[in-house]
Amino acid sequence: MSAVEERARLLTAEVLAELPEQPGVRYELHEGKLVEMPGAGGIHAAIVVRLVLLLHQFVTSRRLGFVFGDGLGYILRRNPDTVRIPDVSVVRRERVPAAGIPEGFWPGAPDLAVEIVSPHDRAEEVHERVRDYLGAGVRLVWVLWPKSRTVTVYWPDGTARELGPDEKLTGGDVLPGFEMTVSDLFVVSLEASSGE
Image (cartoon, rainbow, N blue to C red; front, side):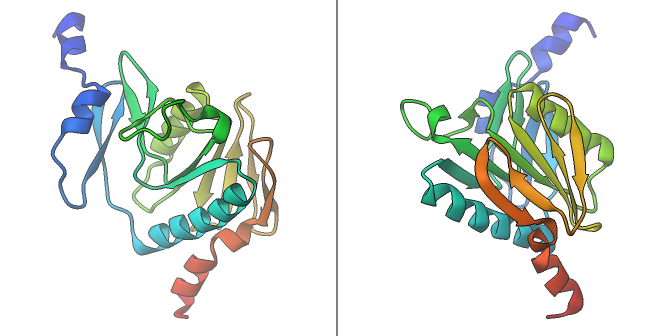
């Protein structure tokens, strides 16, 4: 297949948006190629809810912007298109389009993107997602690892730092003043695994 034929087969964000919905199945685009995203488990979903609630309370009380849970797609790149759906994201108020919150995919990157690693995720895929976020202008990426109860924080300059359960996770200049102990993110997984 020629490069021209290959390019013609790549999907756009607009085509992705028109795909029929199927229960339990969602798709992203990576450089124009369709990527099926498996459904998440209960612990993953509970951590998403916990983090959305914590961030929502912090962000809204300071009128910093908007917090979104799993489901909002961001168009990170065009030609070929990349659309990613972080588990949790924050968009600062100054980066909201003049027309307001878009109905469909968000045109551009969030300020904070959070990925919660599931048992079926491969490390290579997680790193690819982080590279996509940072390459599109995300200012802060958190990758949560429920099994080890750690968080890896990534910054645009290419640096990363792993935080253990007793360390503090902060919002940096994206969410100034936000701070919590890493283990507090995983309280729901601890409760689930201990039968409480």
